[in-house]
Image (cartoon, rainbow, N blue to C red; front, side, top):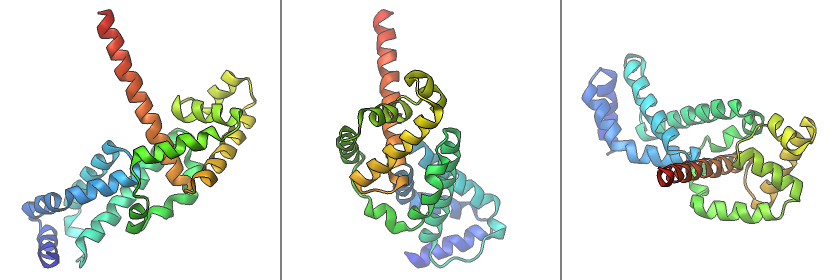
Length: 213
C-alpha cells in the first residue's frame, strides 16, 4: 500500500493526471473525515480537499519526494482548513479567540482524541450553558446562535460594547472550564450549532412560505 502510494506520488510529480485522480480516490474518505473533524463543516472540508488537489496539480513539478503520502496530505489539508476557519472567524470578529489555539489541531492525533459525536458535544454544551449567569447566557445566544456581532448585541441589550465583549470572553472561558475543551474546540462547536440553527430557520421559513402559498 505505502509503496503503491509512493509510486503514485512520483507519477504525479512527473505530470501523470491519472496518478492525481488515483490519489484522490484512494484518500478522499480519510481526508474528508479529517477535514470534517477539524472544521465541523462539510462544505469547508470538501472545498479544502478540492483546493488541495487543484494546487497539487498546478505545482506538481515543484513537489518533493514523499515517503508518507497520507501523512503529507493530512498535514496539507490541516493547513488549508485552519486557514479557511481563520478567514471565516476573522470576518465574524473571533480571530483573537482562535489564534492561540490553532496549533492544538496541528497533529493528526488531536482529532482522534476529540471523537465524540457532534450531537453528544452539543448536549454537553447545552448543560454547560445552563450553568452560566443569565447575562452571559443571553450574550452567547445572541452572538453564536443568532449571529449578531458585538455592536448589534450592544444595541439589543443596551450594554456598552466593551461590556458585551468582555462578558462574551468570560462566558467562553467558563464554558471551556465546564466542558474541559480548548478554545478552538468550543468555538467550532458553537459555530456548528449556529450553522444548524440557521439551517433549521431556513427550512422552517421555506415551510411557512409553502403553507402560505
